[in-house]
Length: 120
Length: 372
Figure 1 (tube, helix red, strand yellow):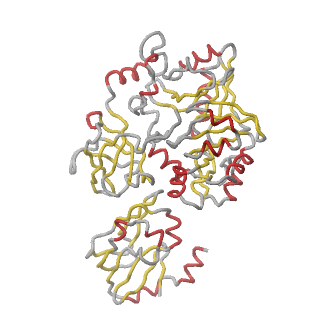
Figure 2: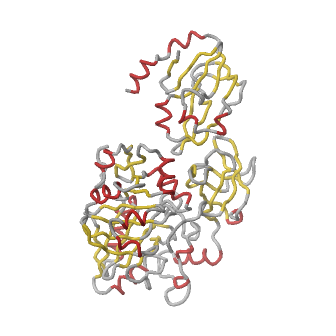
Figure 3: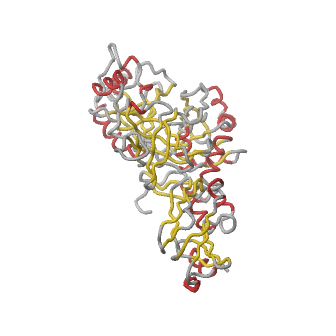
């Protein structure tokens, strides 16, 4: 089950990890992505920290950590193929996986229906 | 978007699903559903149409003689106006007393008058300046009842010639007038993409544009791709790569200033001549150069440039930068001290607090395809 943030990120639980990416809506708004700067694995982050930079043909945008936790894995494929963000935003183009203390915080995020209402 | 003006193609842009943004006082299409990357590549491979109706179109009609108007224009610009044959166009620059660039423009000799195309953001200032400086020699007429469409790309000649056969005989920087069902077209073989192409001043701009769009391989291209196309072609964007604080010599536009304005009877006599001619003779302290970031991270306008990886003061700044869809790498332009302006010079650009390697690169990033 996917959860969504107001910053147009999606979160998916995978075992004891949370996988984070951006939505197709966000990818469309950004335009063609030409560069993704990923964090180092094993980095502790707090909610709202700027953890990823996405450069599209138009501008640079920050991706914020949606929750407190540790980034344990990043998607190196995006370094060579940043265009994956446009081609497969909710699949292959995940940004990082986080380990968080308390999975229940995910309950506060939007469901797919709620997110679809947000983007109208 | 109240208070913003619209070009004659506004309804068509909306119909085509363009994303409209404010630009130089106009609501303009930044991209169409195709997107910036594909629009850019399409223009390089086929034909792209650009609404440039926000740019200023100005007629200068001589009061007494063309000769007096020519002299008046040479007193405003460091370029050669005398000797421009009827039916030909040149690149020009208005300068200020400090040698700074007030605007860059195209001017055409159309026999009994000159026709100018100036930047949208500079239009009102340019017109006021011309009305002041050319008061005795010309009537300055702002053309309000025509659109302006750029037709660019390797297929531009074939596409436009299917509507207007006369264009096939034109060479780069020729200008002609042709009567058509869309009204009298004022056509120049020029553009700002590095591709062969035309700029067409046209009364019925919507009808004309729709007729071209109906042809195979013709797409509308937005401002986003217009910017990446001109950056790959190494062309300056006014307000970014050149301003009132940069001179033609610093902006590496010395090619536009011929020998006749540097020495002899017509030398100088334009605003800032002492500064500009001294810089052309001795070399300016800083120069506009091409920059090729060596990582995949684009270096955009405002990125500071350093001559070392750590410490030291910034030696220069990026004035335009982004990703070049045709060259498939990040590209930029900026100003650096002359000693650091040689091709291949190693520099570092500070992106988000990190100094990333970037080297000086010869412009253009991609060879241009003009029909000389």
